[in-house]
Amino acid sequence: MEIPIPDNKKLILFDGVCNLCDSSVQYIIKHDKRDVFLFAPLQSDIGKQIINLFEIDTNKTDSILLYTPNKGIEYKSTAALKIASNLGFPQNVMSIFLIIPTFIRNAVYDFIAKNRYKWYGKKEACMIPTPELKEKFLE
Image (cartoon, rainbow, N blue to C red):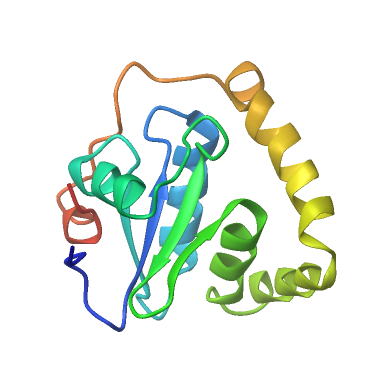
């Protein structure tokens, strides 16, 4: 199965009903000066295709994924830190945390992900991008 994104782009899959995820997407858009990222909710058709293609257990990973053509999929804290590494200074300094073992980073990530609805709330439906941002979102 071919994922329809250009080789020079990276696709961020996010929980479309999560307020924290929505805020994170808005932050990434604002700081994505090199126009690297495209976005799609996990709940979208392309999100479901990628979940099926990579056989992702959504009970274990349900908040953020980073898909890069020719490289595949990144999960959880690794995805978040690799996204930050593409945003430029000072956000890219966060990638230093990649030296921390994945099981430690993901324990922190999982704690935040598990509590994100309680702390930040949840929407009834996925966000609808403004006309200016429509080309950054896949369905």
